[in-house]
Image (cartoon, rainbow, N blue to C red; front, side, top):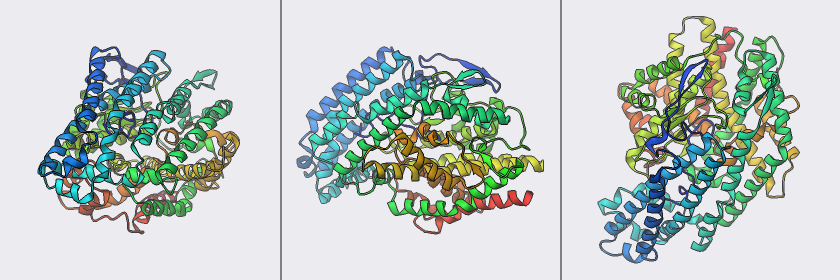
Length: 625
């Protein structure tokens, strides 16, 4: 169990970085909605329930294994690794460390999934808190390992890596040693680690519980946040307006709480970054993503420069379709007047995605199908369930789980394709083991967006009606704007907040001013930002759970645009190369994985190529009138 993974196994790879449960106690169920029967996942593949005796057994085993590991290895790495059999000795230590990490993954994932499924249930909240504390306490015994390993001389490590048993773990060891310049002395690392439960983890939990408990009055009903946000995509303009105003009202009533959470977490990060020696507010995320700062800066600069060609142009076009000069901010994601009406039933959505996947690769479709047949998906909207969607990898000895809040919209079908892309990636990468299966967010989002693109292209090819083709194309452009433009605006917002926080606390009003500034720049003049929108930063979970996560979406989308162009022009063998890229997990740097496709993200023109795909689709929409 790495120091990073000890209490973060509930982190997700997702369109929205929140999670939920299926059946929290392992019961099979099927929720009904307009979309038909919706599946709830079966978490008993991890544990039968929160009171399962196996949880107590595994927590006790975790405690014992961590303590024994510390006894056997602490203070001994430098001496033993330098010996003739140092490579074999260290390989055995890493294997034991990995086994502990896998067990921690099972416990932490189950607790995180159950809690996110109902974060307002006191019994579940206590269970989640107790398991998180136990994992943190146990993992304190392991902190020494990475710290000591990084103090071993490079030449000694390289000699040990000539042993085949240890050579297998070279990618993990080399990644670990990239953290070396930023690690602190052992007791400070231990303090940071132990205090996380009463520090940032506690504020994360407060955010989750607060968001899940908020209620919004729409049409005389008190609604949770997910169905309220869904009304922003309703065909009836008065319902969109009512939802937008309800969101603004409730957010305003809770602005002091969200401002406090944001200020506290920004300060917590500033303290950590300062102690570790990170120069820029986002450098710790870049290190975690194994991506160079200049590559991200080039992406951000390219996207911001393209705002007028992308979002500004598209929203002006959309306003025209509604016979308006401007659209109110609550109409930004309104369904198009010429789009098909009706709800897409769950079986139809499943068939759309699996057919698209199978058209690309039978192996990819077979893996995706298991999520349906083996009950690895949780789809219904429920009270207390967190909003959004995600695919959680859990741990290699188990399997991923996908969560959605499925309501039968075309965008929900794309979300299903997106999360199954993650799921397929996680299944393929699991063979690398607990230490090397995880993939940096930049490449993780590539798999999900590619899954979306396959589904979109399949639907577009099957569409005969010119109006429905226009609606599909416009829907895809909106998704891409939300994935690229919106996420880079989010990144700009975070940079401004974290930079300004160094000079003192920000009021909710000031945070709102920064929000309106970046939103106005990215949305353009065709979106009329009405009063109340200044507080819409409050519900974005990425800002809380994964600071600076958001640029990974834009990275993945632009990369997929380039990757898909290679696919459309490729000879046989592209699917095999693509699946091999996913199967590599975290064993290779993104630049190495992209070489077989002739792509180089360090090329300044690379991002412009990906953005030109979106611009080209808008060209096509303008030509349609």
